[in-house]
Image 1 (tube, helix red, strand yellow):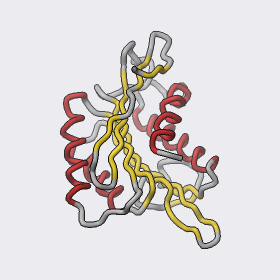
Image 2 (cartoon, helix red, strand yellow):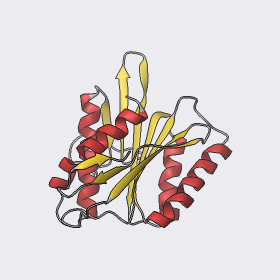
Image 3 (cartoon, one colour):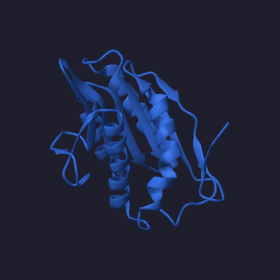
Image 4 (cartoon, one colour):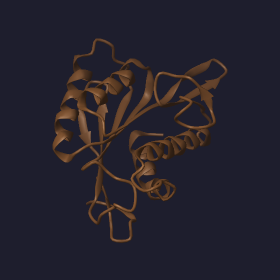
Length: 192
């Protein structure tokens, strides 16, 4: 699965993730997002590892919130590593980003609820950190998904609310992905 396919899949399924989230409960929203990726990893024939508080099932104990592992024959490795942060400070977000950096995984996914004015400084810090890192794994990519304006679970979804994705290469090259907006019926549609 490519970064773009993963982003599109997540965006297309986000409405269903929200339906089971109690109003304004960020902890439950994170758990539902992680459950979504837990099941998606299983659907992609990966062993899925997670922390006990993140999802109720799965193999326990790992550095990040959730990861997908290939464990077939002599082929071992991480397909995806996931960290999510809601309402945390920039330094807490970067601490979780550093966890992703030290892992050898094809896709490193960070989902963040932040205010619009903070996005550029976070992206710049992430990109520069990757560029300056002495350890890089060719082929790894970062997918950073922002919920600007501190996304709140239903019923606070507003028309025009957006979430945006960015791909960062292992060299630190930043590439925006298409944004997704919520329309009047709380369905997603892409921006063009």
